[in-house]
Image 1: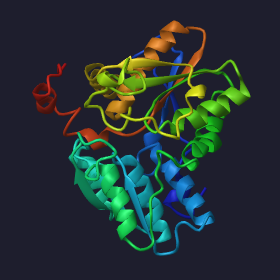
Image 2: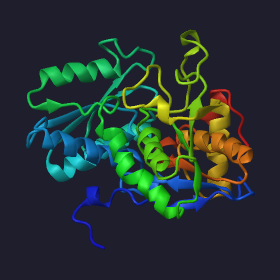
Image 3: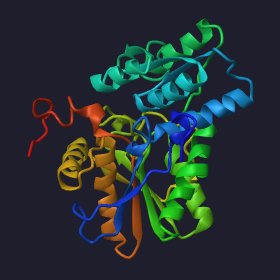
Length: 317
C-alpha cells in the first residue's frame, strides 16, 4: 500500500509477545512507536485536527498551539506539516532534550516552562498555551485533556486493532493513564465487544489517579503519564482498577525491555509493562495487552544514561 502522506500511515501497530520478561506468555505489547512519529499520540493528533476542521475551529494557514510533554506535539507537527499549519508547543522543563529537539526538527516552536507550576498558573505550560491562543490570530488549541476526539480516536482505531489482532481473545487491557484518552476509548470499545474484558490503568506513584489524598500528589520523573488534575477525557467508569508503579521500577523495566525483548520504549512503557506483569500474574488464564506508547529514542540522555540514573538515585544494572 502507498499512503498519500505520513499522517495517513499512522496506526495499525503490531502486537509483540513479551515472553522474555514474562515467560508464561500471556502478556503482549502493542508497539505504538511503529507509527511514523514514534508514539501513540499521533492517533489523537489526526482525530483532533479533523474535528477542528469540520467544526471550523481551525482555518487554512492557522496556528496549532498545544501544551504537551512532547509526543502529542510531534503528532500535531506531522499533521501540521502535511496540511500547512504553524505549530507551537509549550512543554514542562522535565521533558527530555531529545524530545524538545525532535519537536524543533519538525519545525515546531517550543516554549519551555517550569514543571512544578500548577495548571492554573499563567506561567505553567498550560497557562502559556492559553495566553498564546488569545494573542495569536487564527490560533487553535486542540486541548487533548478536554477534546472528545482524543478518546474517540482510540475507540475507532486502537480498540478495534487490539480486538482484531487478538482474534477477540484479549482478556485485559492495561495502559498508562495521562489524558485518559487511550484507556477510555480503547477500553470502551473492547468492553462493548466483550463485557468481561478488564481495563486496568497503570499509574506512576505521585499521580492524582491513585494518590490516597491530594496531599500525596507529588512530582515524579517518568514522563508523559499520570496527572496532577483530572482530565475531562478520562472516563473513570471504564477503568476497573489501577496498579501503581514507582519511578525506579519504571526505569528498571524500561532498560530491561531493550536488552531482553529488543524493544526500545520510553519510561512510561516500562512503567506500563511493570504494572501489566502484575496483572498477568493475577490473571494467568487471560491474554493481557499492554500499550507501549512511545520510543526510548527520546530518553537516551535520561533513562538510558547511566550517569543520569545514578545522579537521580536509581540503580544501574
